[in-house]
Image 1 (cartoon, rainbow, N blue to C red):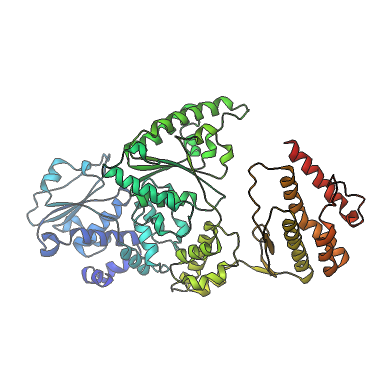
Image 2 (cartoon, rainbow, N blue to C red; image 1 turned 120 degrees about the vertical axis):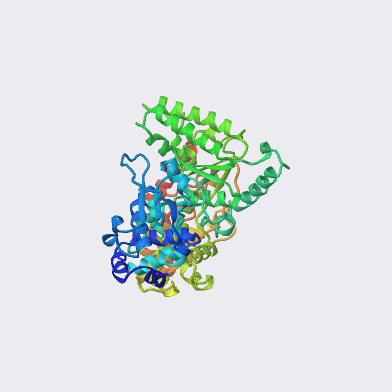
Length: 572
């Protein structure tokens, strides 16, 4: 493409316009729009109209001058040439001077809307084009000519699907990166680059429901199923970062429907934030989903809607908001094609009426990914290194959420871009969080701690097996990884007894007590003492009356706290 530019403009003009990437991009787009017209191919007279984005209209005017003259704006003199470029803006009071009777002239009219054109202009035009957004290769070429860092084809494709103002902002940014784009789940509708839910790794708890919903929506579209039979509302719950918001966009893409994304916070921020403003904004979101049906209405941070059980000075406000929300969700359940999807980290804070059958009746819990899912998610975001290459690294990232893994992939890709190449496994290795080597005494404490949990869990009668894992290195973030873990599943107890609750407390305290006993009497004897007597309560009528037992003298305070906790739980 750059060779073509050199063929059409003077060297001086190319040198000048290269400093103005926006004008150069507009030049490319005008050439693409006009390339099949007689005026462009045969140098014939006539008038061509280009409808462009309002923010870019000045650039397209200069690009039109370059296209007609082959020279930079400084050398384009309409009074000395038979050609002309006319700019027409909506709402402008500037008088447009256009002579449509120039016998051998070529005229380009650049307007921001067809409504801005006069009747004379529309009649005189040989052709009118709406200038489309650039292609990914346009973006890559402009960045190369402007001396910016190289971007991957996938990143360029993401950029060209954005609004013109986003393209304007990011076209010449030194590094674009995935974090430069707004979250796709908060767009007004799905885009071509939005992946389907079935194409994404993870989401094991949500995919079966989504597949059933997709089949039902297809049957409804074909007239084989009444909308009242479709499972049309669900609530996504789970810790932060597990991909609840992203799932909304992926679900809309899976169903091939529009996405209307909003939140109670957005409603409250509308207008002056008064009750009437919030209720009006809430109604508007539901009406938008109804008018765009079939559509997914995604309500993020649903716990912010309020709860009528809350006793506070804002009780009246919350009651009005919740009541209208219940009214709208009840009505939306009867609107064909409207699917409600909520998301929250705190489902217990939501008014119970919102969660009943007929409203958000399906509750889907999204968890931190499994080891297999971690490798799949990181490999997906990297679009380079294979699953087998990243698995040894993701095994070290216990408790990492999908958002954490996506961030790690961005860091790795940024390293690769800085070196002008595709991402490789070495980039991932260099981007891994720092790991700290555990000293021998700390490693011993970790082992004692986890063995304490495991021994008392097995002794409780409520656990059949325990898996203990200990590592001599940890991430430089204790909140994510502590060096060891005792994993077990307690037998189901639908009616939790006092023995079951006491067992939970003993298991929870066992790690700390095992450390204390083990560190006092030595590693070998310590573990034997933990297994034999130090943690298990004496066989007596009152399992908490153990202060006089010789092996409990060093742990009296701990077990008094345990007794207190047990009494508190029993009382509740």
